[in-house]
Length: 360
Image 1: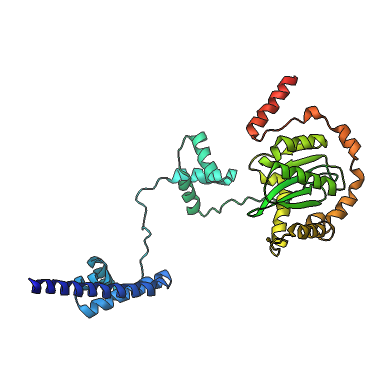
Image 2 (image 1 turned 135 degrees about the horizontal axis):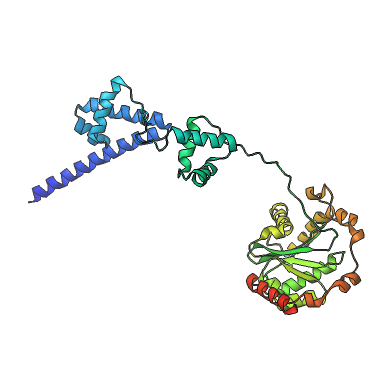
């Protein structure tokens, strides 16, 4: 009994060793031809199969060692001397069932030459005018057969249209950017001159929004007529909107999921991340002082390509003549037209339509 167990264990070890040797051999072959181009790797693998067959002399044993079917090995044994080890073309010699005849070909070519339209428009025209249902791939095959080149659509390249408000303070874009855990940067940038105010807080709250609004009014030279923000909760608190009403500033929130409408402040925050925070120490207790230095450099020294190389201070000075005074801004402000806005865009829009119907 013990002798039988010993023989079984020895056979298992031998079989395991054989499988391990075969696995290593196949791995070396696979690794060698996977690093080569596809055609060369396939040819090398087939050469390896034939070498194993010549060494063993048996198709069954060689196919088992190489991990392929016997019919595959037999095919390459026959083909090695006559046609070589490269692949044959798999393209069919002829299509069994053509889905179009000569009349359809002439009709498709006539439509293409006279109307100069693509395959989809040709399919629609055939169905509407001739009641012929043809797929777009069939029309494309006809056009390719007769060497019709694809239609080129020439579109005039238009430079990007840069928009800006006419005078400084007409619209100020405001946003909050998370720099790191516990560091939120409030940003306010003038739509006309790109003059901006920066400050960091530990949280995004309505109280911090009011504090930042006071800083903006203190540091900004020109009277602010409108504040444009996204639909964050820190801007839709009643206390923040009441503060805007107190200063006679119009509140203009943008649509949800539309950061491009607040594009100037979004782009300026990207500049802050790239040029200031990349080298700044976020653990520095005097981070706001360093940020104030960066703000001064941004507004008074750094040239801007959107301003034709001018600084925001220079751009604001050039257009300051048309900017109104605070008395004029207060006189134009109508509190009846500036109600408290709701954060939900759909609900806010419904309330706006309801007020319009109530007036009429």
